[in-house]
Length: 316
Length: 181
Ligand SMILES: NC(=O)c1ccc[n+]([C@@H]2O[C@H](COP(=O)([O-])OP(=O)(O)OC[C@H]3O[C@@H](n4cnc5c(N)ncnc54)[C@H](OP(=O)(O)O)[C@@H]3O)[C@@H](O)[C@H]2O)c1
Image 1 (tube, rainbow over the protein chains, first blue to last red):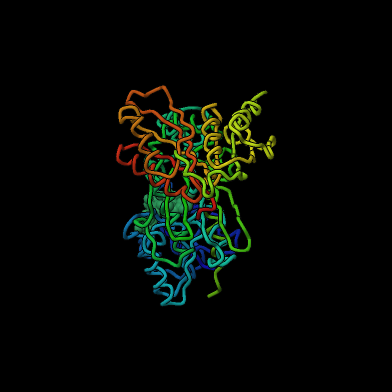
Image 2: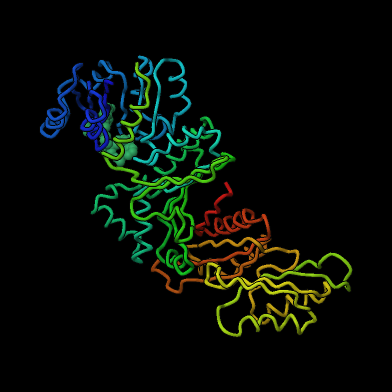
């Protein structure tokens, strides 16, 4: 398939680098200030080198990428709240041209799921978004495989940064600020970790899961969110004395309630993963409980989920 | 917590079950059984689940006994007085236990009031409580509460804890009650 990749960050870059391995051609590649467009396939190396030198992937207008010749648009621009700009407009442009869309960007499906699905229903293009929840972990595909009607609830650890901080605080008896600074040094936490430690990122993922399980209607506003900043290390010590620990858990219940917050679990609970690991637990009818864990973030990891989605699309 | 008087004729001898939680030390079981015999209870069976430990490393023990409802009340009281942790007595089943953490200005917001309010507004009882003695510079401390809730009332108990905590601007770390979903 011919891909138009919007965004040249960790994810977009990896998609461009790995596309060939999965049998696809990248015909357009854009960042915030420029684009590389070639109907026969762009020169990935040259585009990344151009970005290194000049700051953008190419000389073409970033908007030119949207009008290029492609079968599937890969959306990997920053996740934004509310109107989900600019991701939503990119999705809209592609679907209106009957092109497929694969999202890594959570914004459009967390904040404007119903709008996105209405656009998809109106045209011939399909929308997939495996990479938006749990990075490399095939969560959406698993739910789809079981059929959402057989999955009654979902819960899990969906933010690697928060999990790293909590599991290190518990293991080392260190304070929040200390561990966060360490995570920033290691590149596990971003310079501005607000989205991760306040639970927003996990909440967006839960809104997406709720949309899939309950047929739409959810956005961030529907999620009861509590972050990890107010969990002192003394609380983790008390938990440990009792064979327990604390994890930032996101939950979508059968009743349709969605919440994210620090929760007590036993130390050996399946959900008590350590480090940046993510895990999703699905409650199913007939098949009991399913657990899937793995890497929840990272360029190649997320790109692998994006390219797996591309592989699930029908030929155009 | 208070036991409602069991149903039926107050003088009729019936079978009752108590669930206890014992420390794994020699003599503990005997210690727990003495108040039963001393108060007119007739031991029917003792199920000592040695293999399975409670989260606090205690041994769960189930005792079946025969006595009148009135005697049963005395037996349960005597057990508690002897320092035995009674998880369930007769028909009132404190079958579900949950642990929560509280963090914040616990002492500054009247800890004993917090605890008694939690006891008051739920069908739950605080069976265990630990507080960190070290208070940070900002007066933040943490507490761990184990609540025994009557069957089916775990969510109500947690709602109550949340309400009390909200009012006092304390943070609650709730347990993940799996399968509730
Ligand atoms: N990183 C992960 O592990 C991961 C995992 C799952 C999902 N995601 C999601 O995937 C998306 C991309 O993540 P990332 O880590 O690659 O983000 P990133 O490093 O912040 O990169 C975002 C890219 O989008 C470009 N961009 C911004 N506005 C644009 C516009 N109007 N048109 C075209 N390109 C535009 C930026 O351009 P400039 O380079 O010019 O600034 C940048 O290259 C995000 O929505 C993120 O939430 C990421």
